Image 1 (tube, rainbow, N blue to C red):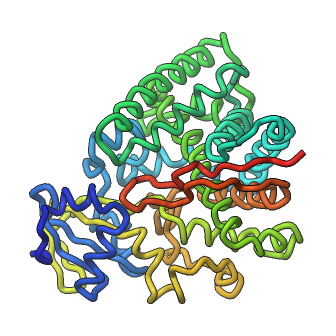
Image 2 (image 1 turned 135 degrees about the vertical axis):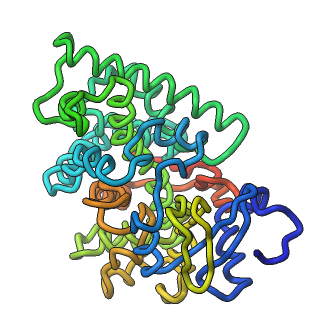
Length: 409
């Protein structure tokens, strides 16, 4: 059923992190794998065709597949990620405006404005932990863009909670419980905000994200409950703030390969986009995605029964030498030569974001990462000695130091 292992796969998943599935596939010499995880049969797959197979709702469903701890921290119970079929498509209509060029441009403008407000204060600080500072910047900017009121003294606590929700989704222990408390606290706050907007005691800018979530109706015509509306509002705010991971990775890449700073500063056509794609490909974030087999499935001569697990190896695919030449070399130029295929580069899922489970905010994320990478390249700073290792057994991982910089006046 699976390669011989000295420990159960469920434990190996926790201890080996991002390397778990790629190492198993490498040992098998294949792009698919049969396993038993937590007592359930599982089919692991990788590659563009596998992505299309995984996102076919006749094969795999998400409803009931996401573990409770992930819902209690990262997505929220009742979120769009847990739905399938018409219910998923209808709820996702709330998120589709995030695909529009105006949304990408507007969100990036608000966040870069928040960056420009914050940076003049950084030279007065002996050390700036870029990961934390970026989270505050993005939280301020995305809340302005989304129409969410945010007092100055609320900015840091909200940013801290949003980071905690992401940081604790794939672990047990203190990080997980910190994430659950953060989600409970912010769901309550955002639900109160939705209630106030509907009651007319708070204002939502016309056609803002806050306005749209307050007006959204389910297929029966009923308004979303305040809690579900809060969950989906957080599912716009939280993933945007999670770009703090990628900004820290971008700084790590520029520290290791400083020659890229000049190209980012130059405004060279397409390079900032290529750099953002390579950061998302090269650095680890989501290790894999999971679903449940709708029926008995066969892929690549491997079988999984109805109700079994189907895992899409995201980290492995983003480092698959069949798709990427020198996959463990950071080389943005690869995306100047060959723009990413829809189902090749999948750090935020695969398939069509308008109809499937791919993140509809992906274009927004790329646009923001482009803009902040260019701002970072323009910034005069030095990186003091620090621990820049990126542990693959920690999910989600980041440079251990959080990427410390000293901004020069």
